[in-house]
Image 1: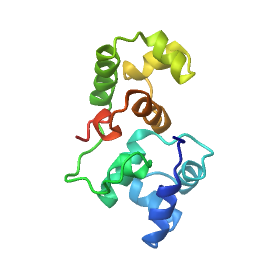
Image 2: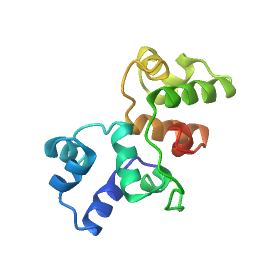
Image 3: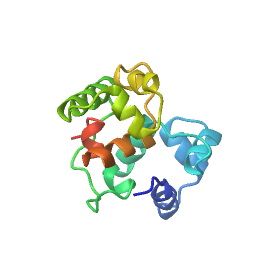
Image 4: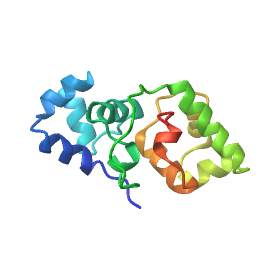
Length: 144
């Protein structure tokens, strides 16, 4: 499975929203949103959650992991909860930070900073974790 933000673009267009309007709704600059949507910058999870909440969508649907479109409730992103769930899942799978970092092709120190909530977690990182562990992005982000 390949990481893609195409649905973000398509949903914005289908709802007749410009990048300027979408960026305003997400409380970020238009350039920043454009860079996320066009893949020039890594979209942080909190932006993806704001987008999903605005349209009442499941993150797994937005990233082509699941067909279920709607989420039954609105929930803001909680960085600490996400970090706790990442740690919990890794431990349940009996893996070390080093092993998982190797699988994700990132430095162990970077992985550790996500798990300890010392750095904003990129959406692509959560996407890759969900694929490796066959687990919902909405679960990992604390949305269900």
